[in-house]
Length: 151
Image 1: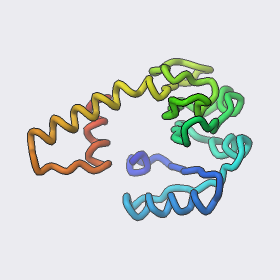
Image 2 (image 1 turned 90 degrees about the horizontal axis):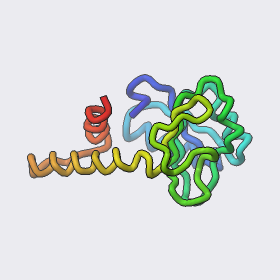
Image 3 (image 1 turned 45 degrees about the horizontal axis):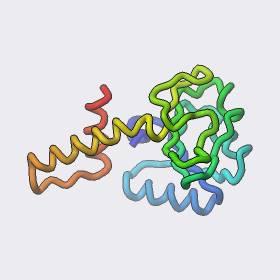
Image 4 (image 1 turned 90 degrees about the vertical axis):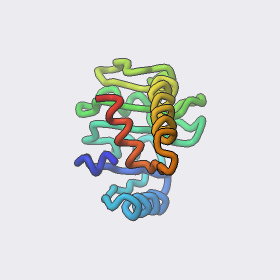
């Protein structure tokens, strides 16, 4: 969805094959190009975020994805968001309660921190479905609703 807004987007996985499969699925579904990057260790993940402005971590529960040293002095990074609420968290140095906190000059969100927005979005979508009973919301429509909620 960010790629449709003009962002260059990459997806990482521990194997290149899995990253490529995910990138293909995204390309087929959303008609966009996503870079596939093998990132089987923290050094590879640190290289993967070179030049990035945003990092979204959505790995398996309890799996550390990115050491704090890999992002704290990163010159371009502006925002990091970690969807993992099960220790060990996905991004070291972010607390699951962070809600737009500033850490090392970057805005960070933890899983619980962005949870209130997620719940509000769920409620907004359900309200829309009560207004129009045959309504089906896909990811793009939900994203459009979310954008109205955050400006």
